[in-house]
Image 1: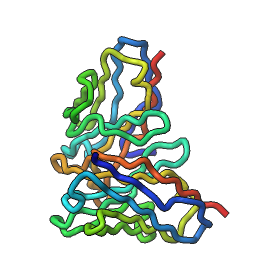
Image 2: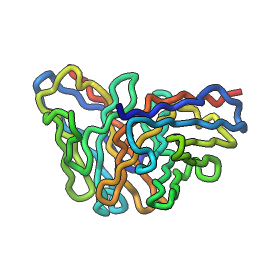
Image 3: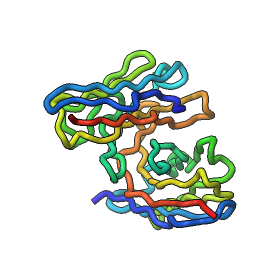
Amino acid sequence: QSVLTQPPSVSGAPGQRVTISCTGSGSNIGANYDVHWYQQLPGTAPKLLISGNSNRPSGVPDRFSGSKSGTSASLAITGLQAEDEADYYCQSYDISLSGSVVFGGGTKLTVL
Amino acid sequence: EVQLVESGGGLVQPGRSLRLSCTASGFTFGDYGLSWVRQAPGKGLEWVGLIRSKDFAGTREYAASVKGRFTISRDDSKSVAYLQMNSLKTEDTAVYYCSRVVVVGATYAFDIWGQGTMVTVSS
């Protein structure tokens, strides 16, 4: 099991809004460590999508947004497009693992 | 263009060693930490370890699953980072990505990724 828990899959129709949750604990997200999100298109390397909970790197559309509260974080995608079909991963830091970077298990987004 | 290119992957027998390289271009390599992240076939991302920049004494951190077997090093004069993998196990089979580390708050994010190199551990 991953230290950060994500739903295995989510789906939505084009134009809809979907959210992906990332649930941690008091030793990672709840310890005030930032959460970052990555998008991995099929057959490609991951790409940084959101950093520092809610900041979009240059070039990332504003349809993607992130938030964090307590021991959880969320990625929201509005105006869903076919090209958004990908795997999404959250990532943070955990103080209980001798100092360790941790990833969520990943969520497969299907655009119906 | 900012770029990372991994090399050195291949087929190796259990118990043997392999060294991966990550060659950087388009940015001042010595100013950044470098991390290795792997992905087993059909599975999610797993952090392997990182090496900080010289400004942070080039210190390293490793995941528990590879600690004592894997070593990350860097040669800033060549803009290359290495992942030395010893005592390889079948469960080390994965695509290995190197990524550039940026400090965000009290955490690390990975803003540039290479294309990955496949390592298969099998007899």
